[in-house]
Image: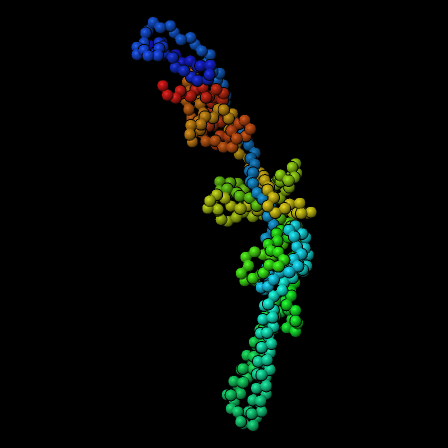
Length: 365
């Protein structure tokens, strides 16, 4: 029985034998008319060479406020917030009052101070009387020392109560229970977490009254994956693009690479610090970090030359007498209409660059 290899007009390789099996026939007649040859697929075989390829790594990132110039403002004591004069995006100065706080803690602190003051006066009088009694040998030296210790303790308690009032921002001689909430830095209010009239619990509140940041410099952070760590050293120049400013490129250097991998993504944080004149860069703005990596010698082949079989990638290599064999390769990134071959091919190898798909063995009967 004669066997012919033909290719159909639809691109599939067909193996034809010297007879056709009509539908329903079990036998084969040797005198059947031969199948006419169909046009064969055009195959192109080329020699591949290594070439020096410049590589650029792109990392998605985002803008963050510099934590060294960011503060969360909380109430220094419990009370009711009044006259909040701050909105998100507003510029504030260091020491500027952003709200008033009315607190019952102040009244309690002043009461504690008054009580301590009274105890101090009582201890002072007792000590003065004790001095007279000791002088007339009516009181023992041990009893007098007890009076001295009690007087020292009363003065210490009075000073503690005085310091508590000062910590709250008040004077022990005042009468007001209102205090101003001020910004400790000059910056921009990123968010405001409360409103006038709300009660503040200084030891229980998890939401800050406001978050203020100085945006004169900002951080650009991105995720650097584990397999790229060796190619990105500290202080490598970086080009940064923002979708908000198309056609404009910002320049910086890598200021920090994190020391711990995220257990889920296996990436570390990479950081670039940028000056931000005019505050054009806003926190949470998306960015793209482009990092030039050292050039490498790689082989580039047309994308259609590489065949995929599950997780395996292969190319056809011409052998002899018009025969072709498959060789497994490892591919890298795609560059336009070409794909990088990391391993599996060598400089000077010949491969099928066009029509490789037609050489696949047909699937099924």
